Every structure is written in structure tokens, then in C-alpha cells.
Length: 181
Figure 1 (tube, rainbow, N blue to C red):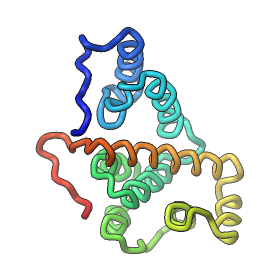
Figure 2: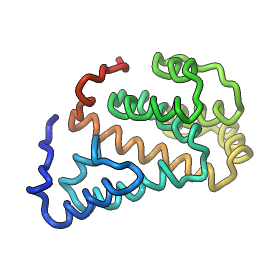
Figure 3: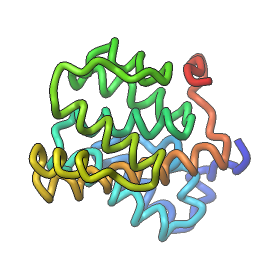
Figure 4: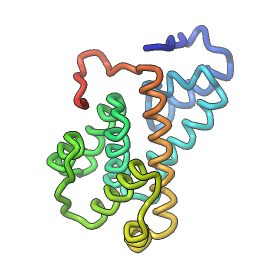
């Protein structure tokens, strides 16, 4: 890792407060990009709150949010993000064949329109830096305006996570094997 972990005893009061808030929240621990962000306490505070919304409070069903996160992690080649969210996505009901297709950069066969729309929306936004009219219209019809805004928020937040993971070479936990090429 390019940046050192800050030992809890070496944290200033603001870093310690944010660390404890993260650890006592729904995540249950401070890992991955959150450890990096603690070097900038104000960023860590704001980013972890946005992350809590994107992961636990968005209007999107969990499996669709996790699908968007996996597409983002694959796009950025963010191993830690893929490692963390593959398991969550599968537990939320994503088909293992769909997840494997994303990992191998294949277009999955979808069983629901909602999954297809999330995949196409996320893929277009990452690849083209915009979303085509037909995909946008389908997303609005499927998720409503709030859902589409939440989807863009999830994609943006997990892009920040991917950039952090890749910039600072955040490693996988001991014993875990990289799955992305």
C-alpha cells in the first residue's frame, strides 16, 4: 500500500471520532478506502456518510445497487471493490453466471429488465461518459427520477472508491486472490 495505515493511538481526535463512527455503523469495521480517507478527516467524514446512503439507504433494491457497484469495480479494475461486493451481490440474489460474465467482460444474459437497465446505464455512463436517450428513458420508467438519481450517486461514489483503491494500491485481505485482469 502506498499510504500507511494510521494506528488508532496515532489518530487525532477528529480521525478517532470518524473511525469509531464507521466501526460502530452498519459496516462494522474500517477497511479499504475508508482507511485511506482517514488521512483527510473531513473527506473521510463526508465520504463515509455518502457511502452509507449509497450502500444502505438508496431507493434501489440491494441486488441492483450491487450490480451497479460490480460494473463499476470491473470498469476500474478495482480488486478490493470486486472482492467486497461480489459476495454481497451474490448474497443479495445476483445470479453467479451474471457476475462471472461481468468479471470476464462479457455482456450478461439478463433475467429481468431492471438488471439489464442498470447494467446498460452503468456501462454507458462509465464507457461513454453519458447515457443514451433510450437507456435513460428505460431507467426513468423502471426506477423513477429518484431511482435514477440514486443510481448515478452509487456509480459516482463507487468510482471515488475505485480511484482511491487503485491510487493507493489498497491490497486484498490476506489469503484473498485477485480475480480481475
